[in-house]
Image (cartoon, rainbow, N blue to C red):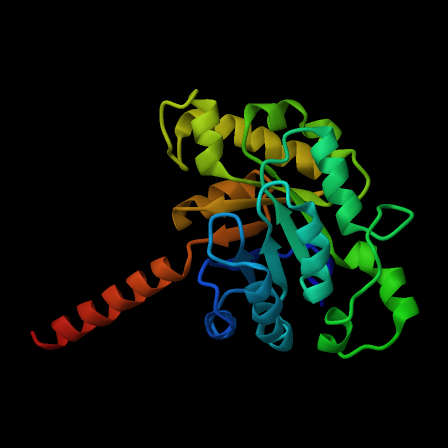
Length: 256
């Protein structure tokens, strides 16, 4: 099943987050318990070549590949899809015009202006049926606009109304900076939780998908109650740190 169909069915999806630009790392992440793998070009080290190569083991593992593009790089959204990504996250979508440009890059006509050229994506998915690909791509590929500023919050309903925008992903760290007027960065800031709940409710009411980056796994239940279904969690350094700590603790415990 595609990521789109799983989210439409109400499934909760957990995606790994990759900032190390190496296909071997992406391959390793596919063997973990995560449902999907996200390659981060904004704050992570991923670039066009690492996305091109890193998506291959993800696609071959039958897990959804997601790419977060750099700010304003809507051209990279189309390239990520052509490389085999099932979803793209665009950061700092603060206006309807940002959303329109993002959607135009993500969707084939008549919804958007995406150019034809899935020369990597189609063979990676084992298909040669161009008509079916064209027919299904607009619904099978997801455009997530990041909501992380007060401007984006004010424009949320209009952003959601843009054809081709399938959902939003809340960036709670940046949102906390905006919400506090630059006074703090706190992804679990209690003062902003009502606003995040409002985002979840409005996205759900619009029939779109609500996603969020999670720093503390204990918050997942709370966010799920707000309507969020796609959760991005941690990064490779975090996974290695937790895994190493678990192994060392177990080894030391065995010594008595």
